[in-house]
Length: 106
Image 1 (spheres, rainbow, N blue to C red):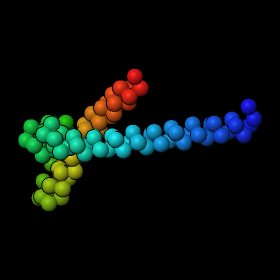
Image 2: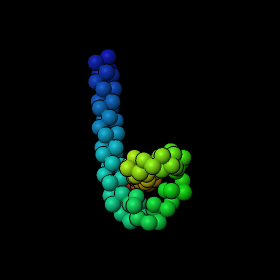
Image 3: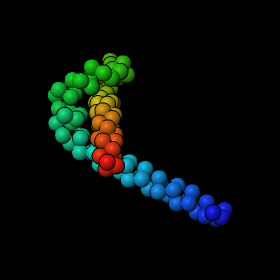
Image 4: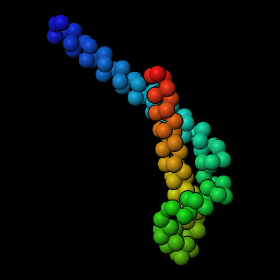
């Protein structure tokens, strides 16, 4: 096998892995969006909001409320809760993508 063949093979493998990683990330993002629209991961469903409030750091929010900066507090709360549920959805989407990948290799 010539040096050219080795380089060509390695380059093709690199491209294949890069494309596979891009497809996997696109699948994960798609699944995240689907999950965030479902009741189990929607940030502002009462039970989900309660869970997020139980798990996020509320000190900055409390400081804003104490300073009567309610608009900023509302924006921060929205961001914190959305980020929390996006993280939860990402974990689940990655698990699902891994399962789909494993199933496709059987």
